[in-house]
Length: 129
Image (tube, rainbow, N blue to C red):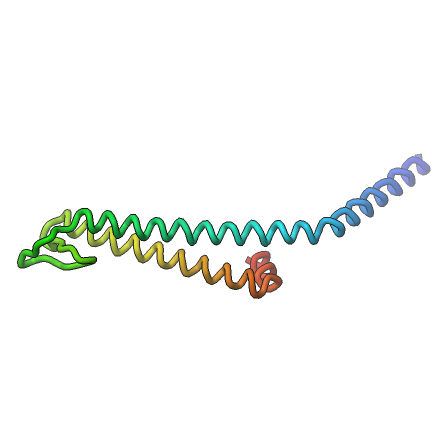
């Protein structure tokens, strides 16, 4: 029984050593894949936010009017009625959507720059958060 226990412990230690060696050998490739994935993720965020911004601008201009009335507000070259709920909804949607996309866009650029300039700091901050 004692002999079998010693063999099991010895085999467990060998497996642990092999696993550690495998992890050490794969670490550089794993880090490259980690960095590559995060670069692609932030580039996709940037592209999506640009598309959202242009879509919001297009839709806002679509709902705007060419001529002004007394209670209108001019945005993006079009006039919007500030006393009409539809006009207020369009203005609020435009502002909120555009601000959201700008904030996400700037955050993605910041993270992308940090990732490309200081990848070790990015890695440390990523795992601390």
